[in-house]
Length: 282
Length: 154
Image (cartoon, helix red, strand yellow):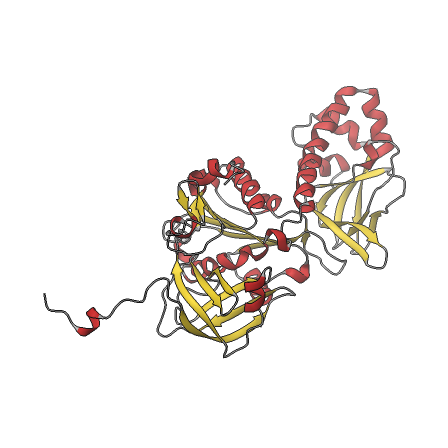
């Protein structure tokens, strides 16, 4: 069969990073920052997918995409500086380059959730992987029932995407509740653990799809609360984190029982992982 | 004009309460309006009352020297403020401050304790209404104490 030169060109190997410039850098809080990358050509992604970002000379880490999937010419990532690689990424400036591989993984079920009420529950930096879902829901608002977002953070100073939180709070037909764990007297919003705020949202449990992203302790507690409220475990989706290295299911670092978080996830339906979450060895 | 029993009847606290018990405990209650910044009670003071929030929000706070007051929980419409009236030495263990205009039903704790002692059935009804929110707050406090959103758990 005749082949064109283009067809003969080797595809970019999934392990080969693309040199990609930083085009915008925003500090969200003391230890969280957001930057945009502009890869050559549009890089389509689904809400919930992640990229591997390589800080040259330091290392590579998986980071969920926090931007708008309808604007794939720009890849936005929101990162908390907790280790050497994320700290190095936090020192980048506009014009600097990172190594980019991806997007990888299975994202949030935004298509399957059409026609349902949708609840998003985020803890800490967990709001970042859910922000693409919020963009999606706002863009396709008529396709969904009631929409509610719960977001928990340590303190008011740790809230990310603050201007958007205000925008979403003012958005009609969009329920947003934000809770911080502790606050000074200037904070007039909710203080306490985020999950009890579920009772403040309007939704029909029998027709609700829920998506949770945050610390695993919070995921477990929130999923149980949703089940208690009547949401089916097959309609609860959680974003899992494990030690992802290759991002293509080859290295086994992120194995979670029979699953590889990098290629079978990071988003899983709760009924597929609930028993695995009980194993402390995993 | 609604009397205190009517107001109480419309609060989730009274759900499932029979009319006799409702009338009995209403004798220990009064309607209060708190402006933003008003304190319902202060840490260390005698815990002689509790509140059912009808509308509004109340911050539960602890003062930390050199850092100022810290809110650890907000209590909103339909919820209960204050449980120290239940157990000796009946002393408030935190400050409670209205963060917005708040309407509430205030109960005289000593009056209600007397009625609970006199009729254990009333006491049991009170326990059924206080224990669930207290257990939930304990569970929430445990999650908050874990520092879930700290860097080590990010």
